[in-house]
Image 1 (tube, rainbow, N blue to C red):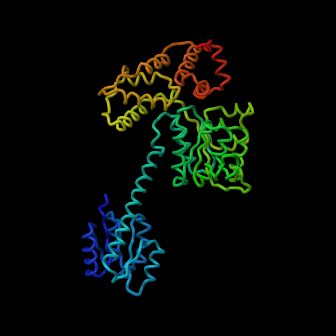
Image 2 (cartoon, rainbow, N blue to C red):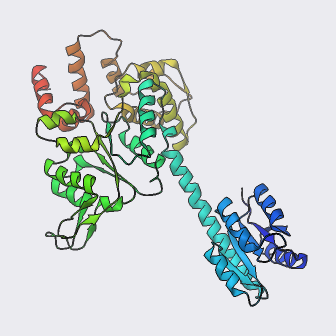
Image 3 (tube, helix red, strand yellow):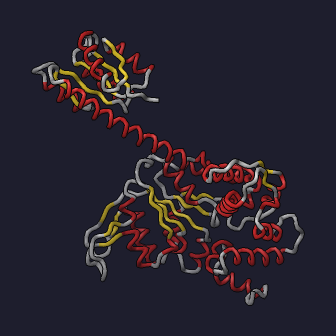
Length: 449
């Protein structure tokens, strides 16, 4: 941990000690060196915040030492001491990356002022670095829990694809973690320091989605009182994640295809092209080839966005991961809700593993959060699942021998119940078209239920 450490490099002991005393009175911890070799040895063994170095040193000049320090220790700020009449040394030092320079003979207060300012910059840089590490850790592939072959295969393809500029299509049911994968790909890529922007294409009407994606000029239509930057511009040099691309209006698909092919578009109300550099990751829970056959999705766009396809398995096909996922969510929500992590009996896991999870990992996460929130027990068993969850688990126990049509009928009923009978949302979760859902409701005589 850093403790406001300053390294003073000067071959004059009297000056070193004078600066040392001045800065110690201001609360800084001081180390000293008489030459560049000694200084580099100290830098390699200590966490230094600031270096104050004379230009003239016996073995290597401060100007020669400066780029070495900035390359090996980029978060360290360097202040150069110059002789009176050698202002050009200070100017050259700033050009090479020094924070500032001090002319020997300047008032003590100036040195203190410059060192304190440099220290504020160091603290800010360290905070930013810490936040960046947290973000990279949160969205790294290591954050994706599971060791089943299907999820490991998806992670492997995603890792190999991260530094490619080719579009990626993520295919998976609702709740399988498509956005988590998209974020992990972005933060593993060369674009990690640029924006990651996401939009759900199913949440907007065509005109609104076009405005969100591409923006518009003031006066383009009634209500457009000022220029609006679209998400493609917001994501410039970064990544744009288009979730549920299968719901995008086919007319808007043509404009998207143009951007993917030419990296340009014309926003509403404008006559000039806007150029962008964006990597697109798309996701869907629909069968896009089926939509192509129905005239609802462009085949040329499909082949453009699916250069790399990654299939994300539903949770029912990675049952071996449920225990690991549950443990992870239990730890997360216990800490978040400031509760002791409970002991989990095997019956609890058995009950979870017997359920088909139509909402996949997201549903498991919600179940665990609700249980941790509602129960204050040191041990969790199957009986600690809520009545609603228990009923659903019992209905869909994969060990219960049932006819296939009964399983499907009950599954449709469960999904409809979980979304308050919203047919569109249920069809999305089931991975079927709305027409197919209505046909099955009629076949199973569920229209009145």
